[in-house]
Length: 171
Image: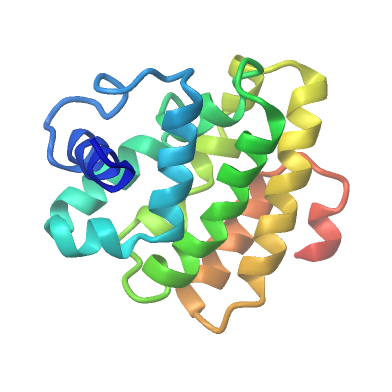
């Protein structure tokens, strides 16, 4: 099976399934992390294939406090460069999806489940959390420079949840 076919099959498990999106994937798999980064970098793959309601449901599930994103970025068994790439790819998701369609609450609430509610505290140690938060803050700074009100509002909302010394000065 080609890489593109595998990505499309994986996307089906996320967006076309009524099951929770982590049922169909190995949460601690580097390939899952790479698939998610590829999806975020090219969200038109999902946008062209699935209905808007499926996108809202899929993206909401993957970004909640027990969802795929927080579990993958905090998994120490996945090499840090792979996890960092996943976090950085969220900028593309904002540029190429949320700036076009904020998908109701998804854009605004994206960071709540990842940095809010203490989710990172559940999934990773303090050292890992510092690296993750610093990378998220860098991504949020890029999102703040976008010329889209929904994206800017979401980045400000995310920064309000981030336990990082630079967050207040960025806001």
